[in-house]
Length: 146
Image (tube, rainbow, N blue to C red; front, side):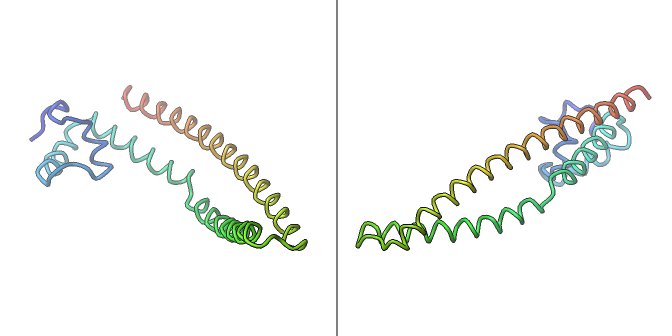
C-alpha cells in the first residue's frame, strides 16, 4: 500500500483524474491509499471541482457555432478562388469583378469579427478561470484549516 506521496513520480490525484495512472496495480494502490490520506482526498475533491467548473465555462456550443461559420467561410473562400482562377485564365466579367470585391470585403470583415470574438472569448475565459482558481484556493484553505 502507498504510504507516501513521494512514491509516485507525479501527483497521483492529477494522474487519477486524468485516467493516467499507469497499470492497474498503481490504480488499485492509489484507490486503497485515498481513504487514509486527507491530503490526496482533498486534492482529488479540488481537481474534480476544477474539472467540472472548466466544463461548465467552456461549453461545446462554441465549437458548434464555429463549425457553421467555418462552412460559410469555406464556401466564400471557394468561390473567391474560383473567381481568382477566372481572373488569371480569361479575365473577369464586370459582374464577377464586383462579386470578387464583395467577397474580399466579406472575408476581411469576417476575419476582423472573428478575431474580436476570439479575443473577447479569451478575456472572458481568463477572467472565469482566474475567479475559479480563487474560489478553489479558498476551498483548499478551508479544507487545509480543518
